[in-house]
Length: 336
Image (cartoon, rainbow, N blue to C red; front, side, top):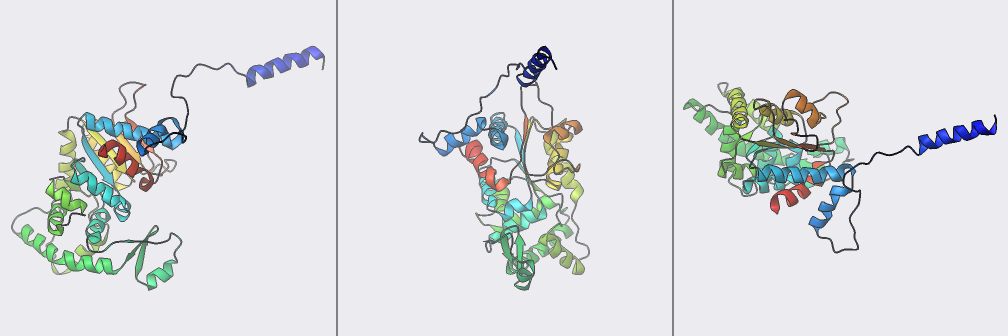
């Protein structure tokens, strides 16, 4: 190969390697400066420019601030694991202070709150031996242990209240999950309970899966001797959708996924989509599950409104364990 050909090829290589860049406007990537006396708030604000999920966390905080500033009806959806963990106390704080307008959870998200007013759950190990725990009568939720005596206490407490609910039904009251939860929140009468404060502050609590947990097991046994006992899910379905339809603006905060995520998003479909949405979960979308579906997928269904402009963000998904990030979000977006 002649010298001129080599030189020509090198020039071509240089053009490819050192390709001329377009100018990109945006936030310069930068982390916190620990040489300064940083407050917790300073540290979290620095997440804006760190990149990756730190920047998504900062976006989530800013979107929730926007929801509050624009007086959105805020829907908080959360799975039972949120209540299994110490995030139960964070949710209780939000409800106690009327920062949230609507709650959507699972049966486990209800019963575990009530159980914890009687006896606490205990920190354990993820790798604890399942057989040994079973023999000891200890149930495991991740690295949280729940001895069976907690469920025995719950059974003793719930059975008289199921009888009271049946009497209400016989008197003509239509029992829906939200009415049952409101009743149980009143009866538990404990300041540490999410549903005590939901009852006290008239915040509706919906569960599209009221029998998927210990509460469902108790109802199964109760129905053996009380076959007329029924729960109306349809009325609650209508009530949840009506709240969305009649809201001027809505904001969604969804911790975890599954049925609570779909229930919250689907209710907002009927109003042309939610105005804002913050998802916090670690699920991926490659298997087509709703759990892993991004906010952008919900836009395609009409469950979330598209942003008003290409420069505006009205949704964010934080890929993280909610126990790591939700306390920081509440500290910055609500407590302040």
